[in-house]
Image (cartoon, rainbow, N blue to C red):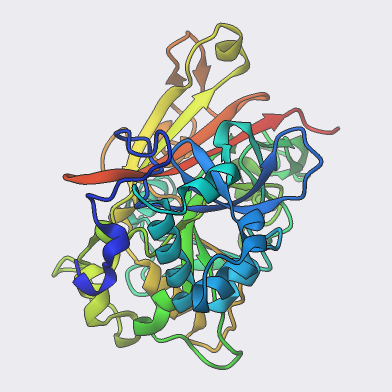
Length: 441
């Protein structure tokens, strides 16, 4: 890991005066400090920018009224007076880092700011969340070679990967209007499906093969002018942070509509993100080197540099859980479906940003880039039901006696993510939960 990404906010010995923030594996230690937009549940308050610390959130919207700092930190805090992260993210990396440093100083054990900040703490369990940023555009990539291979084998057993896969980060431009925050509930999508055997007319009705997709979302901070690409060496300066993303997929709709232009109704009905954005700066201790097998094509020059090679990969553990109407009625905990890791992806965050803009495409503050389904190489590491059940052939047995091939009404998918490293506090991304409601027919 490149030491230039580290500063004193990453010191694993740091402790906070906030109750519960130093407990082992609480996920929100002082080394994390993720951002969200929230308010007290069942209140009529405005949504405000908050930062997570232990079991609490510090209300930055109210803190901004006090102007406790000077310089870039004060400028960044003033941007937190808005009900979205966009004004803060638009300021750029120097301002994000200054705000993180000031928060870290004031939240540390022994800080003289304790008496002033205590009144601005709200228990996270008492919050309701809004989308953390206004999302102008959304791009979904396809960067897990394990997912691409597993799905490809179902359609092309002899050649699961298309010739371009190892050369270019595959992606498509999606829509942002139906992206919701954790807790999102949406009706089962309707659409056309492949004609039944022996018939010419396609079917129409509620999706029967509804799936989840375990992804991470990359949140763009500062954008780039149209016609000016972002070189890979500058890509990380444009990324504010990462979140969890469930890019739900209607597999039967997609099978009929995806040729020749790709998915449409199969993807545009809903996507769900976690409320907490973990900054790229907070993830510095969990960087790893990027490499390719010698037998694979090496990235073209615009997709590779020394920093990416030395520390472009992020070690983020991912989990998928499922609860059903029956399991909740019985008081059963959600069932663990799979575990995987972002480090298994074929392309890095910097490579996605560099590729997205190499033709002059202008990213904008608040844009969201999805990684695509993040699967691992082994059984139990699948990032979708389509992989787990081999295209619907092998139903999944759930601990309380039910089976699932694809999702039924009232099923809820919960994504979780964390970063762990020996001698360092665990960092959590919180949860990303979404529930399927009956179709509106």
